[in-house]
Length: 134
Image (cartoon, rainbow, N blue to C red; front, side, top):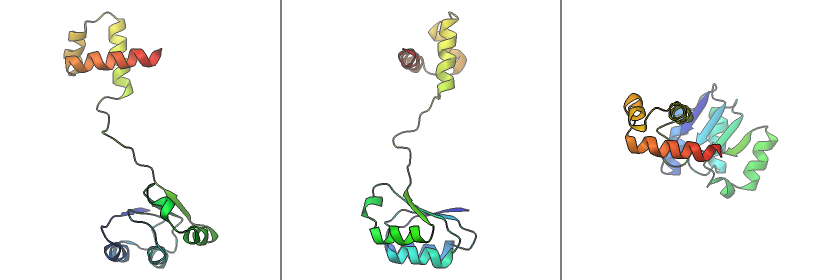
């Protein structure tokens, strides 16, 4: 079981770890740098943990001793990647559908009406799709 623990301060993080963790947890994400105290609390409450993750910006600041000690115990400490930026509203299948409809000779305005996508967005997605096929 994976658990995500977020806090603004270390005392708050330690308190949340105390409350949330149990023996079923195998993976823990913490949004603050994993210090000795944090790692000890995780191991006390969840002895079956196999992976601890933290934000990529904090990973270089983690003590090498902590990383080495965890590796000796068979526990991975790794940075967790999160997708950055605004999520895409229209996926690749929508772009393919637009290009297919254009290939069939359907006018852009009709494509916009059928798919319920704004006209300007259909032009944009068609342009992106056409450029990615080159």
